[in-house]
Image (cartoon, rainbow, N blue to C red; front, side, top):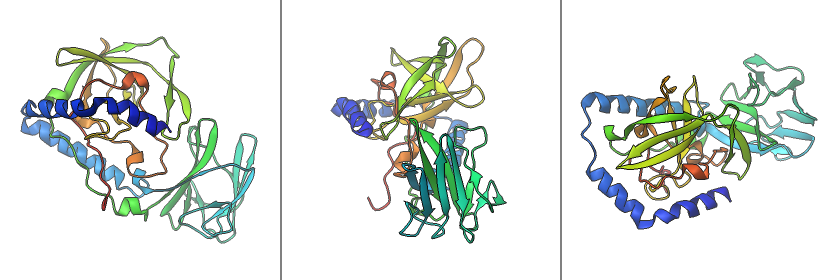
Length: 308
């Protein structure tokens, strides 16, 4: 539902989006070798991250916890059936806000790297130290996640077909004109913004401020979420969305804004959310305020799955 709505919202670009992209690409600023090398290094790091045994491309399952007790494992009789892993992993139980797992004797599980013997509590990805359950000699991982007031088991495996068969990532040519000097305008402390994810679940996310920038004589604004180390996280769609880039938008991080509010937004480093690679991600979507009437012909293009 959420993705369908996003596709409808982005379809307004129509042929205009393709036209803007072509014209902008033709006038791309020449890039010096150092700038190109920096972008190539970033792209290589991006791919390396995806190829990690526990990277986003390794997801093999997203199992919502619907009952107070579930048997978990790859066997057909389990209430939560894993795509890979021990036939019988254990008994998952939910008691109020607490979720525990009692491992089967021969499941050979680890909890945060240590052998699991007795029942243990699963701390979710909202906790300061989320619990990581290992299986298949460390090739598999299981975590508890919380989304929209619901809980699920997120499962990864180093032998996931989406990881072992990851295709190439395609990009627009590096263009220094898309490394934009912008201004961060803070919101009052504590402000949040509703963010819908690809599964149509909504969460209020901290919204520290808005980023303002100019392009081609026009002004644009992007509502920012919290990034790392004081930086900003931007989720946006634009007039290439659904055409040359992923329909549901792209992600972009910035460094922390300077004391005067100045911040650099490098659209060359815009990248696709995990849900382009797997059906088991819970990708947040751009809020309506972040649908730009602008063809951002920079960064990562839409992903084409091998054999598609």
